[in-house]
Image (cartoon, rainbow, N blue to C red; front, side, top):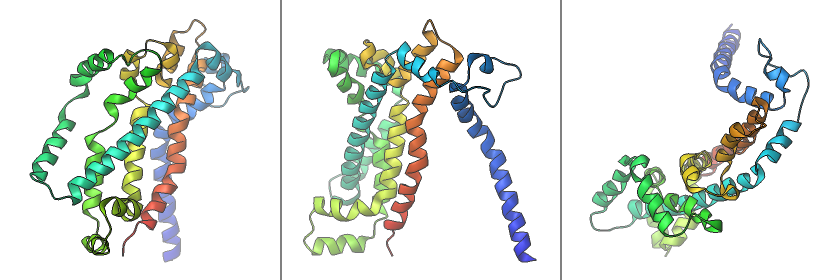
Length: 278
């Protein structure tokens, strides 16, 4: 009797989860389906949930309408540089705030965290003037302009510091007694045992940077250095624009973050199990 009730409760839980997931998954599903529909199918009423004919030419048309492939590369370069630099700066700053002895460390950390309260809209103009004065808005130097204001951020430092503070003091003391220096302890012991926190910061920075719109919009004067999000918006202004063309571009923009969610979860879970300290 208990077994049947347990099965019934699991069925109810799964049904509730499926119902809650539908509003979240449906826009993503319709973007993918709309990208392979014909214009007549997408414009039909009532809307069709399945295409009568698959039209993969929408992706080719999107790539031909604007330099979407180059903009895809621009987004990848920008996101890769920002993610790596933020992880490096956050790890080093978090280690200093968690383990190093220094004067007024708590006050400095509080001042460091105050930067999170400054809205981006308040500093976007000074950042633009600085990048423009440095000549980082033209040619290949545009990559530096896209990434320079985001190479370090207090949010990643805060998350990693909180994770490092949970590290067992006994392990740290044992490493010091064995002659383990700061860099060796950080690289060989602390980082492998902090994979979940590092993965969480990396995913957050990647998704935030990949979805940036306003900063690349005001910085990229040349189509060759505009990012993918700007390219997708340009599809709406193209002379041959159509809903199927726009949805195909949106699908291309969604793929990296979707793959990160699908395949990144198991690495985070593996980090949780591998980094467990008994």
